[in-house]
Every structure is written in C-alpha cells, then in structure tokens.
Image (cartoon, rainbow, N blue to C red; front, top):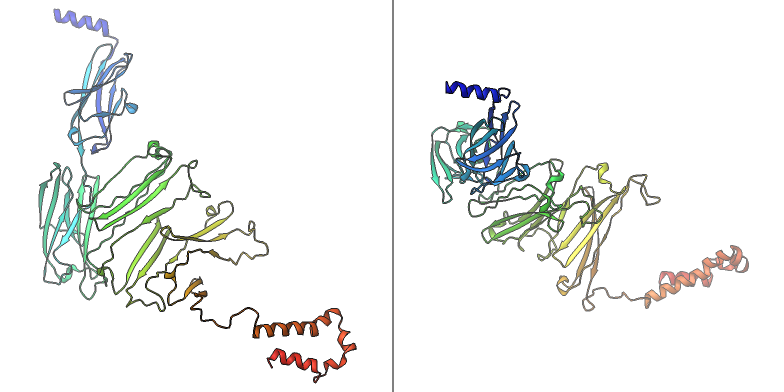
Length: 552
C-alpha cells in the first residue's frame, strides 16, 4: 500500500515529464596519438526536461563538471595528466589536450535531469598510442646474391605502443616463413624485429630485379616501408655506387589557412633521423604565437655524429612584416648551408660532385652542381686547382602571375662567404609595357657587374685573367677576357701612348686630313682649280703623303 501511494505521488508530481534516455559517449578520434587531442562528446535525449548537470570521469575520478544553473557553469578538478581545453569544452563535449599514454582507459559522462533528477551514465574506452618515430630498418647479410644462395634479412621497427606489425615481402608477396620477436625499450615502449631466410632462385628475379620489402604498420595511423633491391652482376644498373650512403626524399602538401600563422609566422619543419643516434621529430599546429619578432623560421638540421652537420631553413612572414623588398608574398625563398669533411672515398672515378636540387611539386625541378678534382686528374686545361667554377641551369614555365608590376626579373646571385657577392639579372616585359625604346621583344640583353679585391694570390703564373662567358643553350657560346699583369711582368712592350712609330702614324693622319679631306669640306674645287697638278701621280706632296702612310 505504501509503495502504491509513493508511486501515485510521483506520478502526480512528475506525470507530465518524460524521463531522460539515450545517453551516449562518442570519442573522436577513436584512437588518440600520444601528444594529440581528443574530443569526448556526450549526447542525450532530455525528453523536454531541463539539464541539471553533466559530470566527466576518468575511471572513478571526476575531472570536469558542467552545471548550467550555477553562476560558474564549468568546474575543473585537477587530475594528473589531464589537460582540459576550456575554450572548446562545454555541456556537450570535453576536449582534452596533450594526451599521454597513462590516460588510456575508461572515460564516462554522467547526465542528470533537473526536474526528476534522473541520471544516466555512458562509458567508453579511450586508447592512447605512441607511433614509431622512425621508418623501419631493413638489412641483409650481403649486397648481391646469386641463384642458389641463402638470403638472410632482418627488419627492425622503432619503439612504439602497441608494437608495430612487421611484414617481410619478396617482390610484393608476403613471406610467411619469418620469425617475429618483441622487445621492451627503456621508455616502456615496444619494438619489433623480424628475421627471414629464403633460398634465392632465378625465378625471384622479376625484370632482372629481386626486391625485399619490410612493411611496418600500427592500426591505420602508421604505415612505412623499407626495401632492398638486388641485381645480378650483369644487370646491376648501379655503376660506381657506394653502399655506405643513402638519401631520403619526403613530399608534403598542406592547405595554408590564416590559422596556421602563429604570431604572424608559419613554421614548416623537416626532421632527418638515423636510428637513436640521430633523431628529431616535430609536428606543430601553426598559431599566431609562433611568429617570434614577426617571423616564422622552419629549420631542418641533418647531422651524423660530429663529422657532418647541415641546416636548411625557410622564413615565413605576413604581408605587413615581410622585410624583403619587391617580393610578392606568394613567393618564398630557401637557403641551405652545407659543410662536410672531404675524404678520399668521396672521389668516385676521381671526381667529387656536389649537387643541389630545388623542386616545387612536379612543376619545377632544377639542379646546380660543383665538380671537384684532384690536381692530377683535373680535366680542365689551364685551370689552377685553387679555383672552382659553378654552372646552373634553370627552366620554368612563364605565367602571367610572374609579372610583378608588369616586369619579370630573373636574378642570379654568386657569393663566396662574406667576401664576394655579385648579381646578374634579366628583366622581361610584355610588348605593351617594355620601357626600352626601339628594342624588339624578341631580343634580350644581359648585364653583369662584378667587384673583387685584388690580392697577390690571384696572379697565377704572374697573370690575372678575368673572363666573361656568354651562352645560349648549346647553340651559342662566346668568351671575352682581360689579362692583367704586374709592372715587372707585363709582357707587352712597345705599348706606349703616342711616341715613336705611333706618333708618326698620328701626325701622318693629321697631315692627310688637312691636305686631302678638309678641302672637300670647304669646297670640292678648292684644290682642283688652284692646284690641279696635285692630282698628278708624280706630285711631290702626294708622294710624301703616300710614303708617310706606308711607313717609307
């Protein structure tokens, strides 16, 4: 009877209110990468009832509460490892930043209705993982294999949690006879190693190549490959290749938005690493705070122990703070500085080539290189081994956007440390805006200005030669040069101004001008009428002039 009375009372008080239902917890993304952000979304159907509170738990510990009726609707309760993004958290979701591996576990949201104090809880497991920081490393016991030999390969992944899944492939076909083992690192992460052995047969050389591939993957968030190509001695296309050096290429594309500019600077970083000896990895969302002193610098540092260290960087500015005059904010420039110890092993076929490759997607790719030789093998005649020359070839599709203020300027800058810097440029105009009068738009001219301090070391074999080389593709090449000597070594005797034979030649021409040409300027009949005998072949004045001009 008492139960019936209480139920009747509840129906009388709350009969017009439908109870809370369908409380669900959604996690985005479903798997969170260490250091990343996770949004915990709590959805519910209030059935018309007002909301009293939403509470968020990690396990049994509350860390965030939303009570819309209070003066301060949001409350955060300190919990180690949890960082709440207050700007993006509310009564419907909580955004957690800088997620750590220790936060993996059950998260819950508890919703309470205001009128009936009906409460429902939804729980979801949130997984936090650590991806490998490096690509897998694949090694074989030999550089080349012959049919009948046993191929032994080992592949190792960098530490992760969970451990990366490794698969060995032979010509893109998974190799099932492999041994996989797990190992724990000092940081608590796991790394995987796999060992495979296989007998090499002629059938494995597809198109005269045998490829061994190691694929490392973690869920759908990480997948990397490393491979080794093997050839027979007759088909190996790699002449003069040293097995000690490998190069890496990375391609990235991202849509640039205003939000990427932090402190009015956008920083892009490229990280190169070799195992645990050389490793730096950085990913960052660009915010206005990244622009330090109104500049965002992206630096890539590559190093191998203490023997090699190189840097390349990109500077980004906003249009208002770009210090580069006459540069459109759509263009960025790149500078790279390289230093390396030269060893005899670097000279392949007695030549050391240093190449710089510049590329923009698939639309632009240019190379510039320097060739270095030893004094005994330098193929360039009459060149001292202390001097090096540089050659650069450029090609680019011309578009209307390249014409800034109706002018397209192509500049070549040559520099040697801080002691020498010279520029040469070409200006291109459209036919309507070309400021050069009487010039055909089919022809272009080039001007170059150079200055350099003269030192005794520049005089090679007591001569300093300055050469200017003009070329158009492979169809035209011309040179002009000036030779300079010291006063003691100048081999050009008889070069004196207006004395000796030069003086006689000069006076003879003056005499000829007054005798023969000046009269014609005063009147053609001046000499013919007054001195008709001059035009006779044996006249003494005419004979004297001819002897003087002929050196008699």
